[in-house]
Image 1 (cartoon, rainbow, N blue to C red):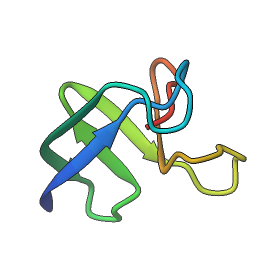
Image 2 (cartoon, rainbow, N blue to C red):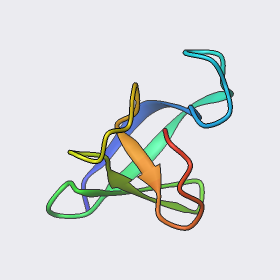
Image 3 (cartoon, one colour):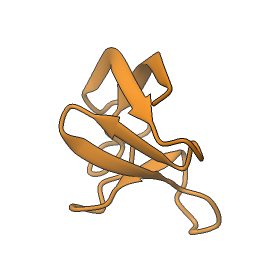
Image 4 (cartoon, one colour):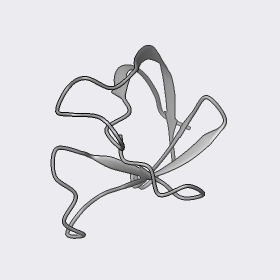
Length: 64
């Protein structure tokens, strides 16, 4: 499983670039479409109209 250190920021419920953020290890699936971070399963947000976000949480629909 590919792994990277990344900057992650919660976008849901906060103004642009004001949400809580973390720097940590993020594991990716082989296709790089799913990320696993701090017990969350995040999917790549392509074509679903999320402003200023690259991922969304599968369980809570929060944008990151």
